[in-house]
Length: 358
Image (tube, rainbow, N blue to C red; front, side, top):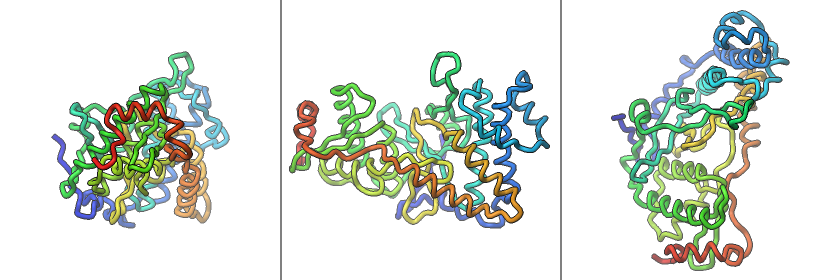
């Protein structure tokens, strides 16, 4: 059984915080390390695009090209269809994750990966996991020939207990949060049963009419759950108020979950801690490698310059990705919710939802 990690009074995970404090300048990776990591990503992309000697596996070709310069023009032309096997995808993503880990170390920031797992009893558990390709389930986006290879997170309980560490906030009673999350999942299912769509509507009624949020996927709710749990947010109001808080409160409510790239920052921060948490759920996609290849080219070129300002370039990339990723994955409904979702409201009422004051 994995050892649990306790979280302190202010919600800061002590073990994680100590790991962040350990990122002192004297142990940070240097520019040469970053250059090599970026070069590996770019060289793999170049070799995948250049089909010459493709009879040899990618690892062999990389060993033979150890001293070769990167041809950026070729590397940046690589497309998803150039990754022709699970082995190639795994090799590329290993280099991508290595670059991600190295640049976080260089910037002196700690980004920990957290997997949100629902156990056989329907209870939610958070597990700290390593940022590794071994946790990805690989497959084609389409069963047809030429369907692009991709990786998704789908960790079993056996793997979690053998390799990951469960996060337990022993100073926090999550019963209210757990009840609210379960309530929201029930409302999600009622919405999906009614509308038969991949997205769904979460509605609530605090006594002044129905309000709601449209959500793109269940992963949005899981990320919100992790944010509330890690920050020890207490849910001790009535059911309808708790649902509204979970869906809308800043900064962890569902409407604040966005599509920011995880390359240089996590999804959740904890007040009083300098650790960021990248949240993954079952079915979540791995980091997009085409975007990483573009950023690796900028990083590599800066490392090769006479007077590199790598820290400045990384901060610029981080800011740009953050701004580009401000596409929220849940949106608050406006207008006459009572009229527009009349049938869904009837379904909710039959199931005992929308009763304010209980």
